[in-house]
Amino acid sequence: SSRAPAISVSAESCIPAGLRLGPVPGIFKLGKYLSDRREPGPKKKVFLVGFFLNFFNFSVPSVFQVRMVRGELVDEAGSSALEWIGLIRAARNSQEQTLEAVADLPGGQIFYRALRDVQPGEELTVWYSNPLAQWFDIPVTATPTHDEKGTD
Image: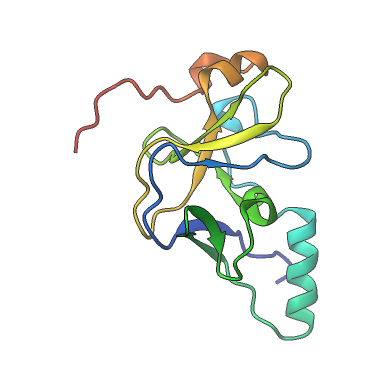
């Protein structure tokens, strides 16, 4: 099949609440409405890398594992978040959201912040923080609220 597999980023070790990743390189866009939160197509670079590796019979992992090493979140090759942060998918609801996109200033660099402790095996997914949603003119209804108490 010509479609590259969807790539997800998941935690191999516990990621502590409040950890910041980034900045996110390039143009930042997750979508504007809840209906935009579909599986994103593979990023062109990732698709081309995947195509190249498949062409030469290398396997491309569909789950990208990241872990904490000396206080930094790195992939299996030891690369920092700048190398793979673009693979993190948009959250489809507040239950599955593990990261929020934040910026220190309007129009400033975008970082991702862990909303809670992320457990091993959980996928990293992101959505706008409320201030960022306002700067991007995202309807607040599209932004998961995190002030309701968890049921677990």
